[in-house]
Image (cartoon, rainbow, N blue to C red; front, side):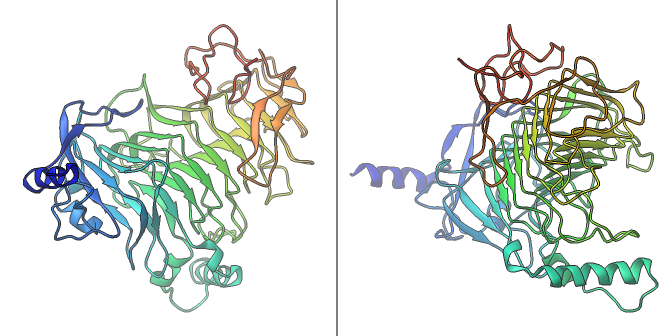
Length: 461
């Protein structure tokens, strides 16, 4: 019997067993054997789905068989869904402590493409389940096919009816077309915890790239998020964490971690359809309103860590927090953001109406005529320390702040081929300071022990 036929004979009778992937910080995960499932656009739901030669075809079929601890291997190809998310996870699809359910690219060099568009599609991947890992997926929207005027007119209609006393009704199924998000975690259901989104590429979504709401224990790491938000009416951003939820009383450990991501050219071109109807947000990364009393469990008490991210050429800020608490923003690089705003209020990295926020060891390189940061409302608890600023107004220098050209290898606002590593002689080298909450390595995995550079990258001789 050939080797291939031997594999087929084995897999006809039983589910294949492989070690479960071990999640990064922010999640548990079993190391025992688990069931592996396979899905392919060329598969069939009549297959048993337990081997690459017998994959399922649809995610509906996959979701009917998964259990805690399982791994779903998504094979190369293009996955689409009409009028619904490509992957739609409800609470009944949750894993459990120590047994995450993982949805991962079968071939990390040939990502599966999850393409979402059309009437009624609010999210391409919707994760309203706990103990979930999304790993290595490419999530693609269709912003380029949507005329700006068409999206603008729809947003204006909503504003006019809702805030301006206008008549008429909204076609919400059509409205979804202009507001499709890439990956949404916890939105519209609340009470979701322990989700990891890593190694994904999310681009060209009319709405936000990666968004979350009423979530706890969330890790967003090593993703590339670009060209999103162009047509939405809700002020979306590349990566957004909003309205968090206290699943326990833990106030000491980091429960929300955003690290190692690249966010580029996320911008809003349609006004935010609230009462002001004006352009807003389109940030690279934002932590948004987590201290409100009307959240499902009250103000969020957990700690958040944002580090080793590179955020450039976004419409709004590179990174900022708004009405948030307990956030450490450390060793990030922000370059030439605020591309859709001329008033200077959308700085590279800043906090706004926050408490217990530390902004440390970052590089903030503003666009011409822009600003690096803003004056905090609560200066005793919104702290800037050991940051490097250049090419824009520095509204607060902070502790040991410095103004100098960081000397990047190949900065550009035009492509993801930009290189924000440091050149020899960069004033960012050794400009950082040690904090107990700082990352041990840079985004390349280079140790920061002994010398701490500002920005997302350590200089290597």
